[in-house]
Image (tube, rainbow, N blue to C red; front, side, top):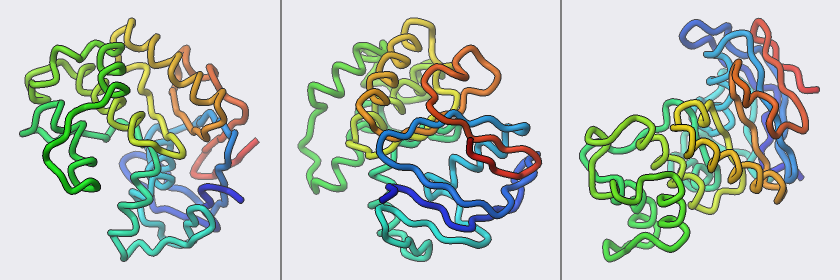
Length: 221
């Protein structure tokens, strides 16, 4: 059974995109897709659709076989916690430190404010070069540090699938190389992934299959 399944999905255009004409798509254990699109906004829309961030004009979204109701936000929150979303619009809360941003989800689900970052989080912060910046707010650090914090947040929440949008491009070179290796290990472990790298040298780093979006038509090959 697929972890994520979109059935007869369709989306109106956003930005300069063409939108997504009716399509079906499934993401299962062991899948690794490279996403290609003639318009960046359509690639972004596709990833947001998979992340449950864009309710469809028509169609069904199933997560682990269960149909989602986009009018029930609490259920959507539970599903989103199982999806690591690293889109270009993923953000941190501006008036909180990087450390607090990394702990917010645990504050909510563990119903406690007396929490500290674990060894896994601290190890990734160290690898991505933000360990010494955790007590600063997003506006006080470089954009690549914000991106690194988002990656740490998403990679350590126990997600069952990952959606990645140009993450490598936004990082400084040493951190990008670390993140590429992390992503490679994740895919080798069979965790399903869809990533969009655009027209960069990272376009075909990990892919097993391809998704093409041309004039709003989605094709999986």
